[in-house]
Image (cartoon, rainbow, N blue to C red; front, side, top):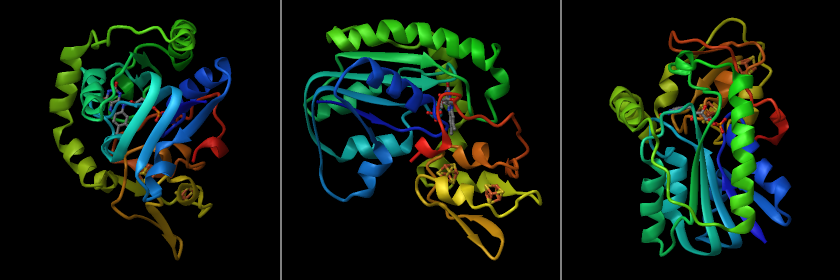
Length: 258
Ligand SMILES: Cc1cc2nc3c(=O)[nH]c(=O)nc-3n(C[C@H](O)[C@H](O)[C@H](O)COP(=O)(O)O)c2cc1C
Ligand code: SF4
Ligand code: SF4
């Protein structure tokens, strides 16, 4: 059995995880948030074991960091990671590898893959259309599938945009600190277009949204996935004064988001 542990907000990382699952038989996809909600020790066993998630603020998302720290042991013949992002990754694969080494494991292969950006503050930096980006990602995935299938080790990639990654870290210092405290949801508000459909409540992966007496509230345990902002059918959720066209990865159905 192969196992892929993933975290996704708007479906890009799940898209990539499903692409691997469809090409390699006997592959189970496991949501990191589901694993974290159980209190047991995390023991990971598999022939191939993968970690697929987005980059946040040129770092590991807090939820992925928590998951990695809770891992008790990893037994795998081939360990890989694929990180999705808008293009500013820094040296994230190396950081992930350092955590795995502390767990007596290490990455055999790791990839950074550019996907449509879902962060309202940086999405406008994207030069190409979402379709163009997804096409390039799809051809990159053809190579990655072969690597994973044949368990070929590779050098860990450091982003060619390492300077951009460092600038992102600096520019996002405050949001990153807030994200560590679960307080990044202070940036959200809801406007009068809300129709109380409860979708934001139902699909928040950490039950961080309540809807009481017709009023949406965030409960400050946010893991920054931006899903509530993107999936509100009325676009009623606002991200400060930043705005972008709402996004969900085109091959993912809302119901697949756990
Ligand atoms: C809170 C947050 C921070 C982000 N920070 C970065 C970043 O530092 N660098 C980058 O390239 N993309 C960044 N992004 C964009 C996402 O990494 C990218 O769109 C990713 O593919 C989303 O994956 P998902 O759909 O699986 O959630 C950020 C997105 C969010 C929501
Ligand atoms: S998803 Fe949008 S419309 Fe539905 S309850 Fe939440 S904010 Fe209101
Ligand atoms: S409140 Fe919104 S951004 Fe925060 S974890 Fe829930 S869905 Fe994600």
